Length: 531
Image (cartoon, rainbow, N blue to C red; front, side):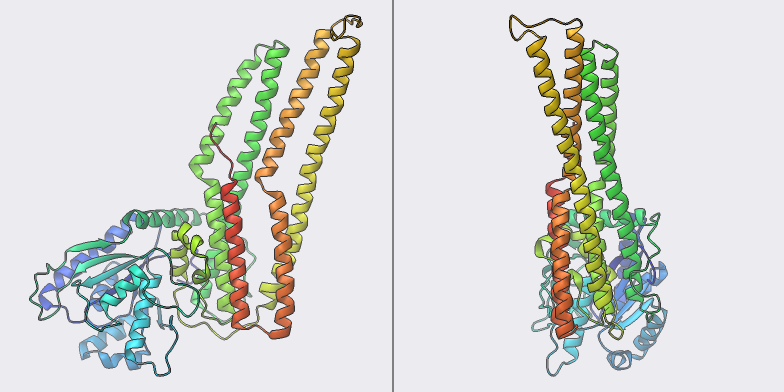
């Protein structure tokens, strides 16, 4: 998955070891059908299979994936030399073959705290958690029955997916649930009336399909994205496929976020200009009796309708915020892995952010699949010093834009006040306010011009102020100041205490909270594109 700038749709696998030989063909066909349907539903996305390659159902699913040319990611519960002790001779051959053909093969890092004497059940449990937690959908070749006292079997893995029934050592269990497609699979020697190959869906079907739609939408756009050539991490770092794809996807999501932010601002500017033109054109129609100006009003109304329709169709504001959230969380994840930590950024997201952006959380889980990170690197410059410099620059830029906006409004207000007093003076001297007032030729013309000036300036001031207000310059400048202060404090702390896990968790958590607050504010203050 190295250097891929799209989000893979991950199919996790769990199932019985002792499936009945007479059911193999039916089960194989059901798995192929499920994978084919998913591929058809997500034409712009790559389907990958996350599989622990246990004997039985896991190997059956690996065969189906290979037949469909679906890449395999092997998430082993322990080192292969130790793992093979749990296989028959034929199973060992299949294990060797699939591990060799897998796109990535790694030993699963522990999600939960490691006990003093970890046993094989603990290793299998961590593998089940890994498969359930990183998949968009879990294929469960299962008879639907839990085994008493089993904490690492198929039933438990299904619980991991649906209920997140485990205790992660970092962060909180994820909100929502992973979809599960059960393919009914009787066990060897089980005479229960279970019809092999029948399917049953568990989870929120609507939420699952929406997650797939949003993911495939992103991948379609990412295919044509033009990311910045500036790398997020040093180019001479050690090879790391997980880090490579995290960085590549960050570049794509960052480019798309900037693209849709530009489109959103362009639409705001267009609506502000169109509204101002409508106001002035109507004043000319009403006061100057330029009757053809009513056609200009009509054209501007049509233009406003087209602009706001385009704004709703391309969903530029939603995409801008979602892709910004994805990019920022990927950046945090890349820094954590580069620092040599196994901390998962998606597990540090606030609960509300996980619930609001379920497809983003699923994307982060899919991209972060991989073994333990390579040796630790210092992230002081990349994460602390560079971000401090960025927020200082961005804060100054926002302050300048805020000052420019305030000057425009201030100048327009001053001009409006001056015009008002000039009009008042005109009416006092030459108008009809008093019976003894003087008279001047073309007084009606002067009144008309004054109305046009006052109305035009007021309209322009209102819409320009509204446009800049929608960009939240005051809030943006304040946020940059706060984050600059935060990074300055972190710089002092890291110099005093070093790059500890606690500090990195604090750093990541604060960044994700800040981004979540910013997105929430932006959503609440989004422009209304309706007429």
